[in-house]
Image 1: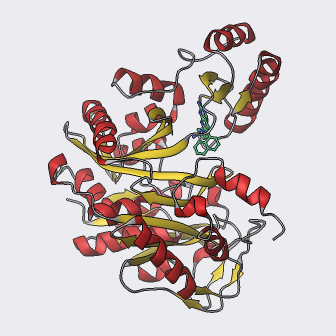
Image 2 (image 1 turned 45 degrees about the vertical axis):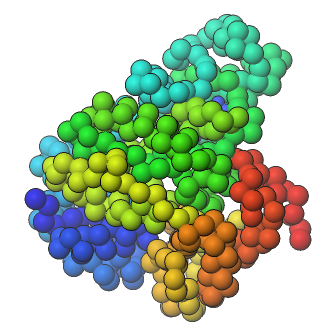
Length: 449
Ligand code: MV4
């Protein structure tokens, strides 16, 4: 049994994990950098340990300091949240060597999905539809030209070590291929210390739809439906919803079953997200994330499950307490990311928050760690809260989102709240008719207004 969880994170996700632990009667340890001494997660945890100076590389990513904090406090498990060490296979391994439970999948599964070629090959072998492309790494320019020619343009060169869009280059014709291939390799080398790349058919205007899964590492796995995360800017999601406005129950059950079966056969333990591009009614696997994701609350709202509690249960060795037929999808949920940023330029806006008034009422959830008087440090991600609204229908959800945004007051720093008020006026948003390029095109077209 897990008795004390060290939360190796900060901000709203540290609070989210803390709340799940508290409901389960599990003690909590917060860790923090010197820049986070006044942070809410530190105040609310049972104990806290300072693990280093402000830069994440010396604190939230500092494995020896986190191990020392486990040792000092007697924590028997670590929850990594998202970002930071959450997909670091070596960290999961080190914890295991110290007999501390990593609340997440095995190091082997993290490593497997971190290599995008291995992940894709594994997905294909397990019956998940993948984007047509090269069979593994493309080692030479000659191979790249031949494969692209066979597949037909446009093609996309992707980094094996990539993810989040870095080291990705489109070639729309043979004339563009050499440059795309060579640039992708050198950028991957610079970004990841690994210049291996692969090639895929480029999908022009897909949606980004991801399937949430939960496995117990004992051969059982279920899916919890999908999230539509197409509204993004520079690979940062801005708005996420469940279910996807474009899928029906039959399509959901079909892709969900394929994914859940694959994850069960892998012997996967914990929560995971299988990411797809969706175009012309077809799914194409791109990646699998082996962590709890920022946007997990929309899935919680429509299924009633507590994903963090489920992570803790399976990490402590319990079998899944649900079968697929126990999962019911009800209603609609939308999450918008409240960032301390200029809503026009997206320039970070750290500093002192004067007042906070959080919206409430039926169907409104706010996951945030800010408070009046809190000073947002400049060292970390600009996410300061998530507003999640729930309604019986998507229409009700949109009405509620508009109402809740109107109630939300954060003064002293700029936030993305006004962006969402503008977005709600757009017919494409109201109708759910957007793809992965819609937001950037809209921002470009509405720049100085
Ligand atoms: C693609 C694609 C089009 N075709 N793959 C971007 C990040 C990485 N996770 C995968 N990405 C893409 N892969 C093929 N074959 C377009 C993107 C893409 C994208 C994907 C999801 C969400 C937003 C995106 C924004 C630009 C490009």
